Amino acid sequence: MLERIGGPEDLKKLTPEETKALAAEIRQELIRTVARNGGHLASNLGVVELTLALHRVFDFSKDKIVFDVGHQSYVHKMVTGRYKDFATLRQHGGLSGFPKRKESPFDCFETGHASTSISAALGMARARDFRGEEHQCIALIGDGALTGGMCYEALNDAGNSNTRMVVILNDNEMSIAPNVGALSLRLTNLRVSSEWQNAKSAMHRFRQIPLVGKPIYRIAHAGKTLAKTALVKGDSIGFFETLGFEYFGPIDGHNIEGLEKTLRKARNFDGPCVIHVKTKKGYGYDKAEERPDIFHGTPPFLVETGDRAEIPEGPSSGHIMATTLAEMAEKDDRIVTITAAMPLGTGLDHFAEKFPKRMLDVGIAEEHAATMAAGLAAGGMRPYYAVYASFFQRCYDQMIHDVAMQRLPVVFLLDRSGVGGEDGQTHHGLFDFAEVLPVPEMTVLAPCDARELTRMIRWTGGDHGPVVIRYARGGSDVPGRKDGPFTPGRWERLRAGKDAAILAVGTMVRQGLKTAALLAERGIQAAVINCSSLKPLDENCMRSLQGIPTFTLEEHMKNGGFGEYLSRWCLDRGLEPPRTVFAVDDMFPQHGSHVLLMKDVGLDPDSIRDRILCDLRGSRNGR
Image (cartoon, rainbow, N blue to C red; front, side):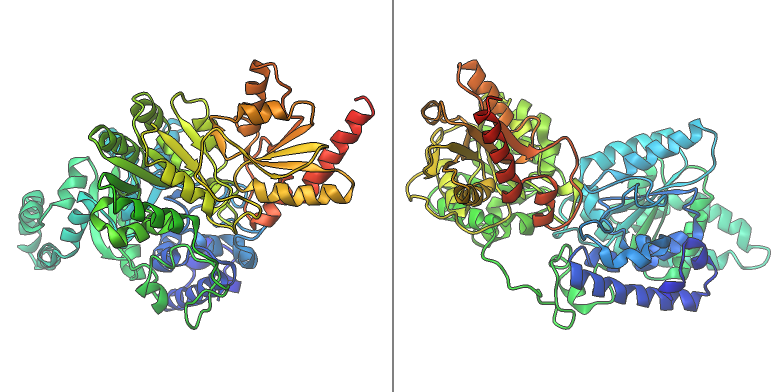
């Protein structure tokens, strides 16, 4: 059936039974494609019926839908003319795993981080009103994203404005990790409140009694707020209605006919409304239903067993980080760790195995996590906040104002730094050096491998003020390194060479060693320096390299990165700056395998070798 769905208009022609059959076929295609390519499976399996119902009720050639986070938009892509390309999902040059405006006119807004959809949809609704248009604007948001404070700013504004829009709360009782916070408890209370649902159904049945039914129904309906408050513990209905939203639900998110009925009511409602939809993550695939956290974002896997198709790599950097912190925590009861709804992704679940009460999960609230860490530090604790480098962008003001200005001993552990791979633009960790290098009182470190990461973390056990440690997800140990304690402001020479010097940061140390080997084949002996301490820099090393052409390598944007920072530092001291800065130019890299993306941005060893050779030849010719 999928091959016959050229667009949403074809969905509207299907009977209810045909729509259910299509839903089953979509699930099989989701499982097959994600098993082959990797991606977000559990969340997409949970919204199959909801997505189909939305497209059958609304006209998204005019209406607008914003998917919060966006990783649950796979079904939307299939039924909006992209099924023929769905096999290319998350592949280099293929479909993105997130909404992309350039892919389709049905993707009206690009998302990749949580808790943004209500703000975006409200902005679109206001644009519609300013332009005198009539279409509807919808935000589809999971209950996990409601742990983010930006949602409440938007809800408060939207309810106060009385702007016509629809917020669909996809309540699957699970974000990436089990939900935390007061609102999650409120939703749980509402889910189990059969009293309210039974009373609501009885009231509608009573309305059908001839003559007396409708007048009595109107009287009862006038008292609905009192009834809701009395019957529903926690009063989640009242929560939304107090903000100015009409509330519909909760409704079964896997019942297409029921969904369509409610969506038609919301489509015509003149004001802001919330539809509370209950779904099950991983619905239709038992392995994903049993472990929705594992199948939230998964590498390729075997459909029959759910096991990874690839041979598992060694422990991730996050796992090693957490193990190191757990060892330190046994001797230092001041150590606490913090995550913003990512204990598995950052590896802190391994810390929680030993110290469950000392791992604090604040939900999708990165800004709050940073300032709370500052409060913990001011109160005498030693907080370690593990967060993806791309999500750390949300903490910028808190990092400066609440941590650095007070020189508080907070350690920011920035995981998944550099080119992010198949998740694409929203998940590349390419801006963190530019965020932290200009900040006074901040120590900035970037280990080249897990062994150096361990040493850096152990070093932070002293009183060193705020520290940022930036690292990639994993990777083998770099050969040729010496054992010993980490010392900030001191670089490590991994390879000798008199013709050039490659100053490499973090993951680029391996690329630097490969590049030096390629240069040696051309008769160029290049030294390779592991510049793991960016702030402070190693002044003695830089002075020893004067007279030798130097080149910097980093998996970061060129603007604001290590090479630019080092160049200015050298000029201020009358030293010769690096000859060439190898980094990502002024662009947003697409999605694809890490190897292909590194070629795209010119950071593979062959490209680096060619540019260094060209530069050295030019200097010898007097250029």
